[in-house]
Image 1 (cartoon, rainbow, N blue to C red):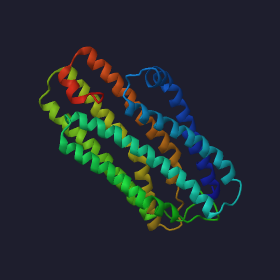
Image 2: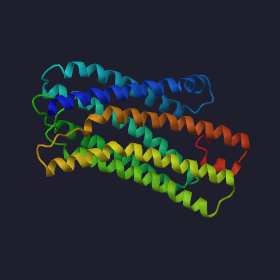
Image 3: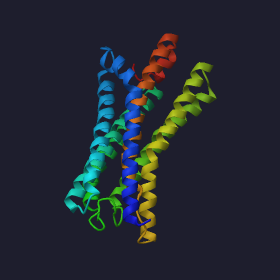
Image 4: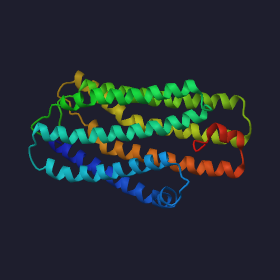
Amino acid sequence: MAPRILSSVLARATSCAGLVYTVCEWFHGLPFEVRNIWGDPKFPLHLRLIYLFARYTSLICEISQLVALNYLLNGPSSHRICTAYWFTQHYAGAFEMNLLHIMLSKRVYALWCNNIYIGVLLVLLSTAFLVAFISLGGVAINGMQYMNSNCFMVEAIPKELMYLCFLEVFIQVCMWTLTFVKYVSFRRHPRDQKAFRLMTHVNREGFIVSILASLIPVAVIVDGALVRVASGMPIMSYLAIPIFIAIVSSAVCRSIHGIHSLSLRLRAEEEGLILTSVDPFD
């Protein structure tokens, strides 16, 4: 299949997949949103805002992205239009990633019993990503060179974008490592079976989220490295950004849903010791 046709097919496929997944997640989370986000005045305001921003930024981005495809795939596009399109996609993805960092940091910080040193480390990691994206994101997008005036065919992935992907993978590894270290420590000295099952669940969930959040960045890194070795090789990994945005948005919303359910369960069981260590609503 010709690279131009392949890129067009993949662009439509990933956009449709991202929108379908986002809409399914929207309907899945609608009862929780109505009951808790809008209906419970005691629901923490910061979690309410994070949930709504993650949920509706993704939905708006996926819809607008699919609409834009109908224009961009109909004919040649100027470099300015392509740059504007990818700016929107990358900044939406970065916004969702920052929300995910907040949620992961909040959970890790709670697991470590609000340890000040862990808190400082988490703030530094999240700030590093934000500063790096502000300083390198625009340079990366402006540096993309498009083939045959096609926004979905690039000659090479800018090294600045690869640096950002490296940083994101590093942050995810750090987040999960902190969770895993706490899990191992807890496993050696389990307080009770309920607490151990809870810690196992948190560790497994953290691992899954870190893997999902790292998939596309790793693919971009590999794609960028391969094209420097085998010139002329088609680059397609960045076309999966709509799926990446949908997955990250889902991870943020499901994390909030999960910690809310966990908080209610722990309070019902009156596990005071676990609440102090794990409950992000405290």
